[in-house]
Image 1 (cartoon, rainbow, N blue to C red):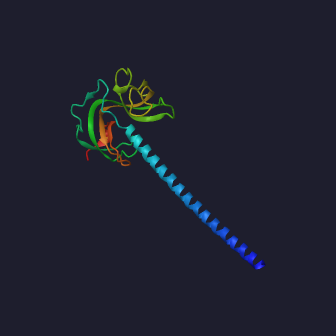
Image 2: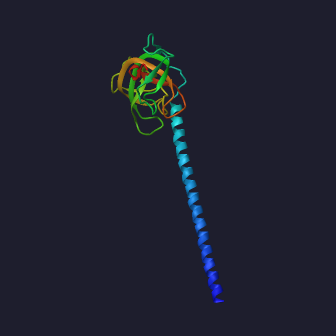
Length: 198
């Protein structure tokens, strides 16, 4: 009888160990699946964030009232050029198709978005025609202006300080960023010195 009890206890112990092993293996597998799912979701969020950001940099192609088309631009509408600018990720060193060329004054500006958050420093570019009652161009460094542009969220209606001014031809372009397969349409603006022949 004692032998039978011992055998039962041993069998019970082995069964308990086996069940515990299966359970912990299951937990490990579940944990691995959860980790994989979290990683997948993180990658997807980053991708969506990138896509949203590129969508935000696309425009309607409408230009401000009073903006004059360039008569003899270095890069005519319909031509292509290489971009040498990093206004947004995936832009530098990418081919762009010119969708508009205009003669104006381009400003680099610092502003705090109307949506809140940290100030955006040295944003390139806002053009003279995108400012509310700006007066004569070019405006001096340090001048405070109100922007009437929506290149980025929180920009329209924001107060900006002029960091620098450049009288130039500005270009509106279409391109596909290095980090996305989604085309950015009518991106505003690139200056002539941010483009080169291929």
